[in-house]
Each structure stands twice: as structure tokens, then as C-alpha cells.
Amino acid sequence: MGIVLFDGVAYGMLLFLMAVGLSITMGLMNFVNLAHGSFAVVGGYTAAVLMNQLGLPYAAALAAAFVAAALMGAVLEFAFYRRLYRAHPLDQVLLSIGVVFVSIAALTYFFGPTMLAFNLPPALQGQFPVAGLELSRYRMFLIVCGVVVLAVLLLAMGRTRYGAMVRAAVDNQRVAGGTGIHVQRLFFLTFSLGCGLAGLGGALSLGMLGLEPSFPLKYMVYFLIVVCVGGAGTITGPFIAALLVGIVDVAGKYYLPEAGAFLIYVFMIGMLLLRPNGIVPKKGLA
Image (cartoon, rainbow, N blue to C red; front, side, top):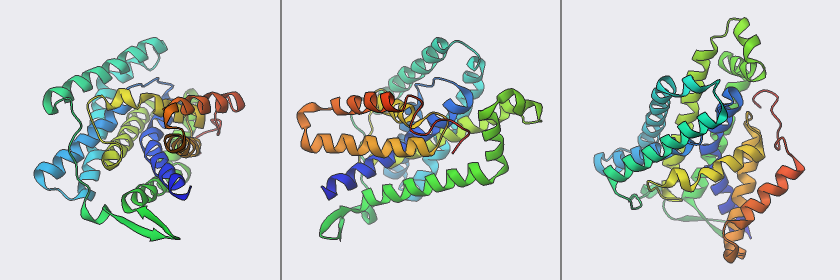
């Protein structure tokens, strides 16, 4: 049971890292962005290529993954997304799902349709004993990364001028603009940050989930479940939801493998019936 819980928490941390950016952008912009997984896969491929072909250290590859995904998000926000902020949700869905299919086709063309080869650095390989259990170093690293990112985001949103502007825009964009906040620029920076976090999560997932061109479609539902169950526009909500989803998914695969992903959908329906506005309803970013 201890190993199941540990693996579930590690998996949940990965989902949180990849989905929290979607929660922030959906809460701020009310934009239905189904292409969030595409930024995760860009970060993962960036890290893998830099490590496999250029011999870049793991920490530097993670930083590069964040930057690459953030830059891609910045370009797409400037070129396409900002034109549809006030559009019908169907238009937003069509644009973002189009980005997904373009990214899948591009990655398949350049890297092939199979899973990307990747080896963890030696420091993250192997296990260490804790209370009679053999725990994975890599999964513990994921948990630490998730906690650090959560703390940084909460600190940034709660104690900085940028965070105050984001919270104001989440509460009321029109009033925020009237107080002198450049809402369009704020959208641009926040969208880029969310994409960068997705890229970081994609790079961290290389040792657990593996990456292939179809990754954005394969995990799209998981990102949406985390955001919807946790509460769009919050940080702690997706964190709690991601942990619950990770534990339920891993426990289901251990104890009820024949059920597949069915338990995740049962969990989602049950949580939305109990908390239709999410575990943490939107009241600014918290």
C-alpha cells in the first residue's frame, strides 16, 4: 500500500506540473485551450534532444524545456490565441485542437511515431530504503519538484506585484484594466508562463510516462480532469485534484487492472457531483 501511495503521489505531481498552467490561463482568460499538452510535449522533446545529442546536464535540459515551451506559447499567443479571447468557445476549441494535430504531425515527421528514447541521469536511478520500503529516487525527485513549484507559484501570486495584477484580472478584467493594468500584456506573460510550466512537466515526465507524438491527445483528458475537479483559476485546487487523480489511477492499475482508466472517470463524476465548482472554487488565484 505504501508503494502504491508513493507512486500515486509522484504521478499526481507530474499531472499538477503539466496542468497548473492550464488552470491559470483558463481562470484568467476563460480560453478553452485543448492544446496544453502540445506545450508539454515540446518541453519533453527539447530536454531529450539536448541530453541525448548534445550531452546537456539534466538540470540545464529542464530549464531549456521550460524556455522552449514558454517561447512557443508566446509566439502562438501573439499570432493566434489573442485574436480569439472574446470568440465563441467552439472557435477556441477548433483552434487549439488544430494546434494539437499540427504538433503531432510535426513531431512524427521529425522524430518518428515511436516513443522517444531517454535515460535518466545516474543520480536519479535506483532506489533508497525508507521505513522498510524501497522508494524510487526519480519519483521522490518528482514529488520535491512539485512541492517547490507549488510553493513558488503561491508565493509569486500572493506576494508579488505581478501576482496581485493576475488576481485582479481573474476577479474582474474590466476593473483591472481601469486601474491601469495592461491586461493584454498580462495575458501574454501569463500564457507564456503556463506553457513553460507545461514544458517543464513534460520534461520531468520522460522517466515515467515516456513521450511520443500522440502525447497531447493521450493525456488531454487528464489535464482537463485535474483542472475541472480542482477548480479552474486556482493553484491549490489542481494540486489537490492531481494528487487524488494520481493515487486513484495508480491504485486502480495495481488492484483493478481490468478496469483500466474507468476509475478515473468515476472519480471525476463523483467529485463534480459533490463539488460542481471544483474542490477550490475560483476566488482569485489561491
